[in-house]
Image 1 (cartoon, rainbow, N blue to C red):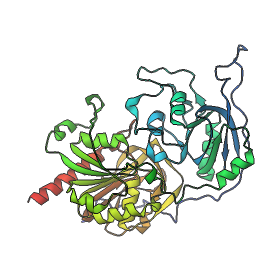
Image 2: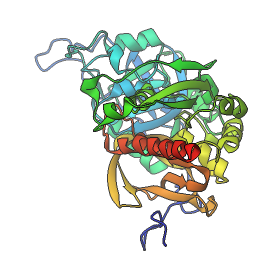
Image 3: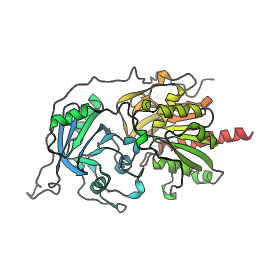
Image 4: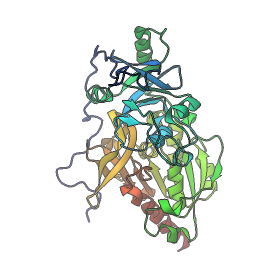
Length: 430
């Protein structure tokens, strides 16, 4: 009988060898300030008092704008995110460690910041790049402005730059290193030199965001935020004990696992597999996280020791770590996938999910062993978006089923993981 995960005739998966990588080309275009200093009536604009800021990209372009948030100089990899809402969740996602985010939605800061929507305890990205910073906050849940929050977190922001032009540049050339500064004494040439001497490739950023010791996670999702039918009924049964590797885990992943009836122990990224197995969990979870997946061999080795012994589920970095544990390699995408509108096909049924994504690396399906099958593909570029290996009791996806804000099309993945643990529990009992 043919496997349900076999790709339909004519479907092509994108591997490292076939992925489109445009050669680097220097561009010397310089942008000018986009925002006028006076209003139509001739009075001073409300943003006129903001200090200047510059963004230098490694292609040689310099972008002049206005500063908000913290002052200083920071280097990072520039990526663009196409989500229309949820800038707070994006900023507090640990997977953005080491990166600057260009928000393609032009208006930022209008709903402020509130403590309920955090995905972690702090802002992890290196800088915020926006077309327009709202001069007013209008939301009853807000407790602080975006500007004040970034100052509090020590994170730089630059506004009044042409984010459409920057995004087009990143799509044509690929991800570019950048430097943002509010220091007028640093020359453009020095900024460009800093860009070119830095790289995210080969960096282990997981160790900068993981927890330092194991802990029991206590928390729930409020009823008004539930969207999985019957989730509370399932949670009323015998709980599943899950050990979650923290590569930079998002809070909403923990909330979703708890909502499906899991008791969760979170462990550091380098926690020995032997100690995890000693806990005798019903399942092991490998979380999202930042940086280059090939730079964390200790995580891959732990995954190898757990595969086949317990049901495992990996999301994003967890998907890439498990992919390597299966024997595959990873490669860097041209400009990555970042946003809340990426279409995914679930191969067994042909179901299309609109997904939230945040990653710059992918698993090369051409390097997978025969026992591991591609379960999901990204319909934008044909890259591998999920894996399934029944002999190893493993499932993975490259995107975020817990997406907060949505879309929530992929929340079914948590239910599939619960079903895996239920089946394993029944098999052991028999």
